[in-house]
Amino acid sequence: MAKSISEIRTIFQAATTNELPSLIAEYEEDERSGVCTLVTRAKKQLDALEKEKERIYKLSEYERKYADCALICGIDEVGRGPLAGPVVAGAVILPKDCQILYINDSKKLSAEKREELDRVIRSEAVAIGIGEASPARIDEINILNATYEAMRQAIKVLGVTPDILLNDAVTIPEVSIRQVPIIKGDAKSISIGAASIVAKVYRDRLMVEYDAQYPEYGFASNKGYGAAAHIEALKTYGPTPIHRRSFIGNFL
Image (cartoon, rainbow, N blue to C red):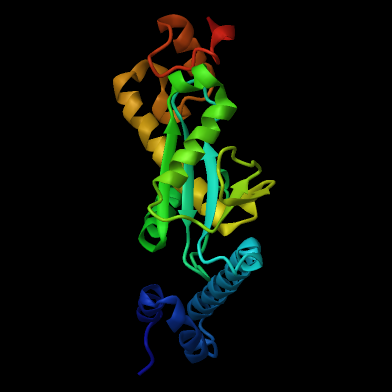
């Protein structure tokens, strides 16, 4: 007796990606419209998966180029532009031939997807380092030098010494390790993309914690950037200890 459409739907919903080809083969001759819809949806799912695998392969171009290096480390930063909070750098060494899907420039991902990928990256990475420079340090040495300082700190706490650094656009001073600056690197290198994700997730969590301390400024939503409500709160309540004095002169 043939299975009902409801039963077949349950089977498709429970199937892993690896099981879909056999299910498609089993049911693609079924002419019932509900089953045809399930088969078509499964085919689209597999097609999207293949396209994502191709994208990740292209995103690993620099990792393949420098494959003779045992430990390839991606470096990226987040938080250079906000009025409040630290600048944070991430350093990530992924395993060779890393197959983590959906890694991308963190700005192109939803908060939920970044959180999901952060967990996967942390479970699979060879090493991860996070560095940060405080608002006071940014005011003291300027944002560029503070960014370099956060990057050096991230490299230092990796626990291993990379053979090469793939950096998002910059060459970090006072670092003896070989460096390759890549313009828009977080969208061109899987290692840099991973670093941008872990740095972004780390900094966003910090800003949510600061929001509990300073609820008037909306840090949980604006992450310290110059949103209209943030600027209005700054004018009304004045700066907090996490504001960058060198960034907010125009608003006070």
